[in-house]
Image (cartoon, rainbow, N blue to C red):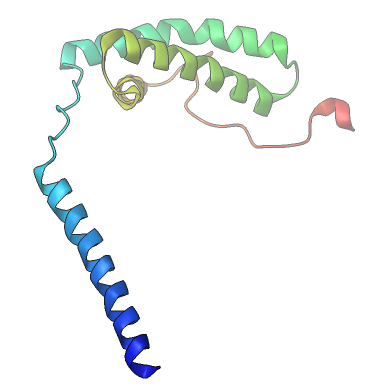
Length: 130
């Protein structure tokens, strides 16, 4: 029985080693995806300004949808911004992180004045739950 167990164990380790070797060979010989396109500095500035121009409208719609509920307004605003960023990234053929990076850079380029804001509201129960 001991000899049979050793053969089974050896066969298991050989199968494991073969799978590992196959994975290493496939990884080493596979084609790498092309590098993702990045926004140029001019495009980053353009995207940042475009998002800044849209922000007052997104904030106004959010205030109307969730009166008196700052956290839900911010959440709704973020959903609008995310949808826009994903569309913009798709249209320009760049990762969505590039678009959010452009928005962030624009926010840090000058003081943020209302109705824009660069902060988050605390999560509290909604006013109508009280």
